[in-house]
Length: 361
Ligand SMILES: [Zn+2]
Image 1: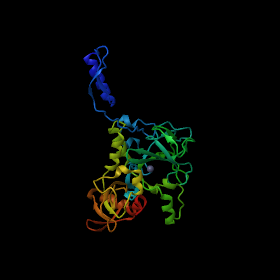
Image 2: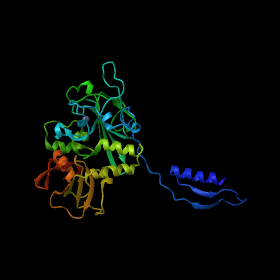
Image 3: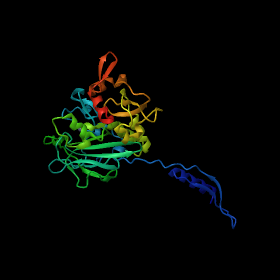
């Protein structure tokens, strides 16, 4: 083998991330084994997350502004289709994004866009009856390094017969067809869209928690009721994926979840391993004790508990440690904190609910 070929071979091995052995192959004297001159350290192959845009739209390659793929709402104000406290003048949370149809419509003017799994995982829930705000919807769960993300696909016209809870699904796997279903006969054709969410499920005991509260409406969706699903910002998520060339490492996805901006930091008197951390051990940070006596929890402004630091002593009560100045208004609107006096906040209902669900507070 020429020196050039030997080098390019080694580079090819490095490029594929495979560990390899450099052996001096020629000339080998008769009767002698090849002499190993050096062993390169084995580079572990980092598992990657293949990600697919959930509709037939070339988002990851076309470089388009998000406003081009978001559906305009009734008011016509495009800003109110994004994620966050943007509905009804900032009073109502929108936990996902509304993706508009791009495929040709059928004879009746209905969208024909196929809706696909954004990442590989497991079909967690399929609701074929338009009996709530999400209409017909599907929830997938994705175990990625130390986190379990959910993705949600709502307002579907139809759900495929193969979209059955418990089944595995690959990235790009077909789930159903885009539509306009909701809990009250559907919204107008012109506004048909896919409502897409990505985030963290708070509890695995939601049905019991809900039954204890004696709400007037029955819980029709088990653990996959929207109250139990806290959405992160999907525009940020897709931008992160695009910046990672469409296939980030699992560890990078885990870090993206944990590194969302923290609006509210609280100390909670909950010990042991909270429910949410059984599915998301990758959210634990800091050099605290192995067995937590309490937790310091970082919430995004929209109520997603993305960072958990174990405490050596149990706090006497639920306590707000800090509120980020720039995110305080959004956190107040969402209902995480209420101002007591200037710069001093108390926990509000959404924060308590999230902690009851996520940590059994
Ligand atoms: Zn929506």
